[in-house]
Amino acid sequence: MGASTGDVRRIAVSTGGGDCPGLNAVIRAVVKTAIGVYGWEVLGIESGFDGLLGRYGARVRPLTAESVRGILPLGGTILGTSNRGNPFAMPTETGEPIDRSPEVVNRIRELEIDALVTIGGDGSMRIASQLLELGINLVGVPKTIDNDLAATDVTFGYDSALHVATDAIDRLHTTAESHNRVMVVEVMGRDAGWIALEAGIAGGADVILIPEIPYRIDAVASALINRARAGRKFSIVVVSEGAVPEGGAQVYQEERHGAPGARRLGGICIQVAEDIALATGAETRAVVLGHLQRGGSPSPFDRTLGTRFGAAAVHLIARGGYGRMVALRGRDIVDVSIADAIARPKLVDPNGEMVQAARSVGISFGT
Image (cartoon, rainbow, N blue to C red; front, side, top):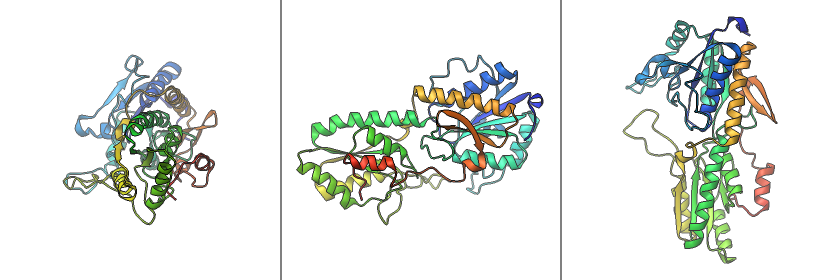
């Protein structure tokens, strides 16, 4: 299991992948628990693993109770983050990734870090799993607004993103109704449609398109035409960024200047809006929420969950529970193996209760 509590003197914390509300709550809890309960030193690794490699000026710095004062309600992360900092496949100017993991391991040992708290989503947990194999003591904290990690009922950041998306849909109702328009709203969700599904239900959407249920534009158009015939002259369509038409593929932005890793999802909202306008003749507008969903102050739920996760991660280190990730099951914080955590994604069940409830109140999924 690794070192015992008495062997731990110094731990470090890093945040990887995309930012989201609640990261600072986790960092704060890690620091306050490690120092206040166990008397350990805490180091913060900036910009994912870049701080261990000195990339782009990122560094490793001490974290104290004073340095985390007042950060609980702040969005983002005081340590910075990166979704292109995989030390096992670090990007280069030539576009050919290189393995710099030995440098990361050596730096951790040079800094006499006894254990690492790594906060991130599926990608970060996969990196953590590889570092474990190289002998690094670490525990994981799940973070993703997509809520697609199966080992935990919910990840922090998701609730805040859901609030932003729902609020946007609420606001679009008034302008859509004023102009008798169809508003197509794109939310995040590469492979998992949780944000679109829940925000769509909460915001009273008329059509929800998610990656797990390929849609037919004729079915979408039919649902909107039937609404118009019934006297409802406006409609709201919520689309996951990873939604796909039946027999089609996800829509990506053009690669920018041939930069490595520049290919990213984007454009499905515009495509759907254009297809709806062509099929129905309705005046249609597209709105992409994008990174608005990642920004801003975390919700009370995410502040609380982040705090619980951070404290639990430190207690897990104290028990020598390396190679494990904290998780929420029901109302309790538990821990699971990182290997199990990344074994499969948590996707929307096309025949599940939530989808059935949405269909029951008249929401179409374009099928």
